[in-house]
Image (cartoon, rainbow, N blue to C red; front, side):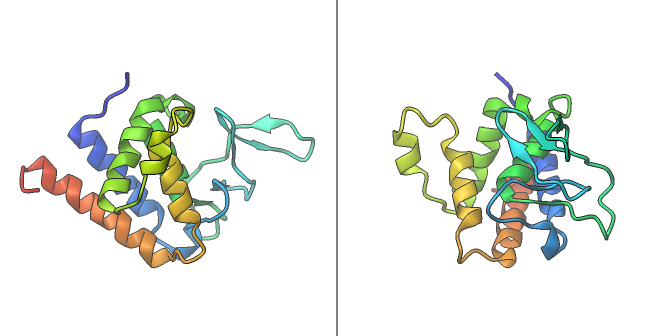
Length: 161
């Protein structure tokens, strides 16, 4: 089982929050786009398809201002959690779900129905995705939640939470 230290949790939350430093970096209705503008797919592994429908890893370079890179909140959490497991988001397993549990708890995102479904192995991630994709969701909501999680984890490090 993959566990993350309090310092790793805080670093992931910091990276997730920084991911959404611009409104154009936030995505709804899918995992998002890489630095080449290709749609990110996930079916156990993150990938994109080229013009010949050949599967490739997403292009994640330095996100320049003109880069079309954007993520939904769930993708940002999974990708940044994966950076602690050899950079592979598909290896995050329980660590990503544990990280998403923090977001659902701090954001008061309802997970009850999904947690009751024995076939759902990622009820917190799925709840984060649904919350992100809600038509009433705004960029400000994403920034508020990611900042709240960051503050919570920072305070927890010092026992002030």
